Image 1 (cartoon, rainbow, N blue to C red):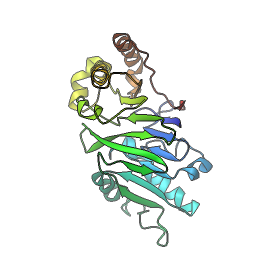
Image 2: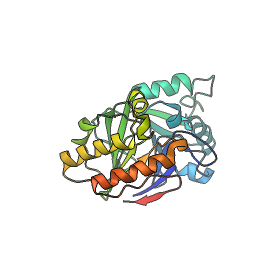
Image 3: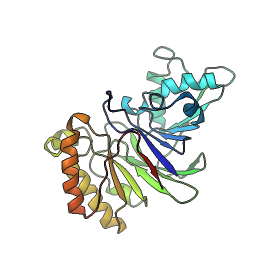
Image 4: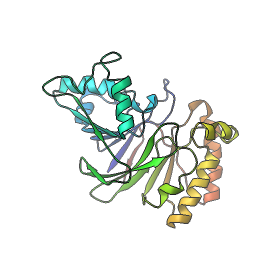
Amino acid sequence: MEIRVLGAHNVESATSRLMSLLIDGVLAVDAGALTSSLTLPEQEMVKSVLLTHCHYDHVRDIAAIGLNTSFFERNIRVYGQASTLDAINTHILNGIIYPDFTRTPANNPSVILLPLEPYDDAEVDGYKVLAVPVKHGVASVGYQITSSEGGSFFYSGDTGPGLSACWEHLSPRLIFIDVTLPNRLEKHAVASNHLTPRLMGKEMALFNKVKGYLPTIMPIHLSPQFEDEIKDEVEYVAKELGTTITIAHEDMRLTL
């Protein structure tokens, strides 16, 4: 299983892109940088998208992939909680902001919205997908994705403290985990349901206690204006945990 990091930040700029991962070229997780990072031939290969929640930096390119898929004369499946899919239909693909590609073209709509229930194992494009609720300002899930060869990772999406309820359900080799703000802004991070390096360290220490091991840890969803500060603090957390932590970045490719 190859994981390609298309976007690793919560802010878009010339050097940072919004949240999106791509698995083996066919399964996307979040869509903040799905079309802005891929050529048209690469977009044509994408079969499905898993959405963690409805915030703009995670769903922005659903509209664009819907349009492009209509030109490919096929459809793309978009999975998420019912409330997330309702938000897509109500606020983005609503015929006003953008065409409703769940109904267009009439003979073969280019976007198919499919609900996923938390804790129910699902098969998507040959991968085992488990959605696990996480704490955020809107209904949100993280995803554990496992390939047929056994490689697995967990992507937290946006989350604040309190992941203990998730850990018993997961056994990933790799975790992409929200680290949005530096430690000095911890109060703001908690209020907005995000993590800092220190809070991330607490969550991963608890994972180790519950599961008896530490997976590879990759902070993601960084605020680029604080990135240097966050990197220094992540190094300190890595020493406390006795492991190596690598911060995710755009165009990173990993193989599990």
